[in-house]
Structure formats: structure tokens, C-alpha cells
Length: 114
Length: 114
DNA sequence: GCAAAGTACATTGCATTGCTATGTACTATG
DNA sequence: CATAGTACATAGCAATGCAATGTACTTTGC
Image (cartoon, rainbow over the protein chains, first blue to last red):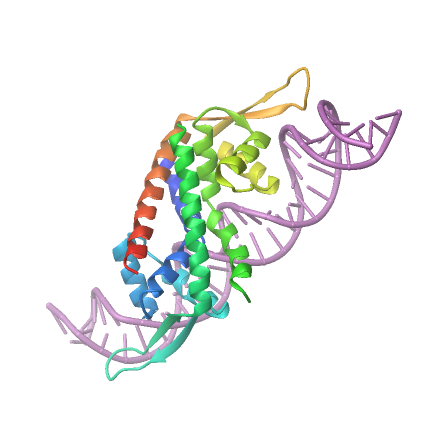
């Protein structure tokens, strides 16, 4: 088995939890809806978020009170469900940023030593 | 529910896949065994690796050919199973480093914009 | 001398989560 | 008028971190 096949299994695992972080980071800049989130995240991070990943994830964030949602209908187009980050979401996001920074520094320490 | 409780659920998910990366990074510096890996990783990264996480993980790495293992007995002490990274492991590790770097830059892009 | 803590490996079962596949419904384009 | 795009949703699979538990040997402190 080549390393490409191993990476195919590793990358999704690597993303676990990370996507939650990324979504909250994006929502910190302003409200958005599922489809737009997927597009923008793909543009900015090269990460393609599958819909079967995104919508359950947004429901979890809502269930935990990190975001709130609101349907918005317009004259044209399909109705959109807009998500907005809450104060609990911002508080949690700050802690995630710390964890991310600490972990990144730890990884750098390990890379340096080689 | 407070953000601390949410973090308790998030951190393990955040680590998925990351531990595999961290173990390989450490093994790049030289062979080691389970208990030592757990101690050293805790020292360098502040990450406490549970034994129920570590030993299955090492078996997966071995099954996929990223490491090889060898029992070593000494005059004193419990026998140790030493793990050594393979060329496939090094090849895979290089790709993981790229993924990590790319993702870190993406996160930074998102943080910058806020 | 002996209990407690440390060293060292291992397994079972649970909970969580990313992803594929599939479905619905409306809209814009060629 | 068919194709591609927009937009949300769910069911089921596979992978993995972790608590709990077990075994066995060794060192340390009282």
C-alpha cells in the first residue's frame, strides 16, 4: 500500500474537529449560510466540505449553543438558513485558537529537533 | 453548557489523526517504545496520550507498514517493544507535513480576516 | 519486609464525527 | 427544455480517541 492511500484515510481524520474550528472562525466575520460556507471555505482553505459533513456539523453547533440560525426568504431563490455565532461561540472559539496555537508550537518543536 | 465542557469534547476530536502525525515526527528522530513515547510527547507537547490510544495506534502504524517493531529484553526491567520508522513512514510523514503546513496557513488566513 | 508507585504492554466497548449516497425542490442557462 | 447550479437534509458506514480494566515486573519509601 502506497503513502497516497494512507493519506486518503488520514486527511479526513486530521480534519475531525478542525472543521468546527474553521466554521466558527468564518462565522466570526459575519453571518452566513451552509452553501456559502462550503464555497468560501473551499476558496480560502482548499478544503472541500461535503454537504453530509456540513449540515450535521451546523446542527451540532446549534444544539450546543455556539450558533443560532434563522430562515431567510427572498423574492427569488431558494430560502436560506443563516447562521450567526453567539457569545458562547466566541468564548469557545477563543479557547480553540489557544489550543490550535499551542499544538502548532508543539509540532514545530518536534520538527525542529529533526 | 459552558465552553469548558464543549472543549472537553472538542479536544479529542481535534487530536484525531494528529497523534499519528506526532508519533511519526518523534520516531523520525530515532527508535522508541510505547511508554517512552507517551512520556516524551507529554513533555514536548503537553499532550497526554492515554495508553488505550497509544498501543492501538502503534499497531495501526505497523499494520500499514509505516513502522516496524522489535522486542528488546535487558538484564533488568520489563521487556520493551521498540518501534522504528520505515521509508514508507518517512514518505507519508513528508506528505503529512505538507498537509499540516497548508492547513495552518489556511487557518491563519481566516484569523487574519477578523 | 512490604505496600505503594512506577514501568511496560495489551484489550474491550463506547461515543463522536467525516463522508458517501441519496433525496427534495427551486432557479438560471444554453 | 434539459442541464447545471443553488440550497437544505438524512441514513448508514468506517475510523479513532479514550476510559476502564487487566497482567506482570521493578523501584522506592516507611
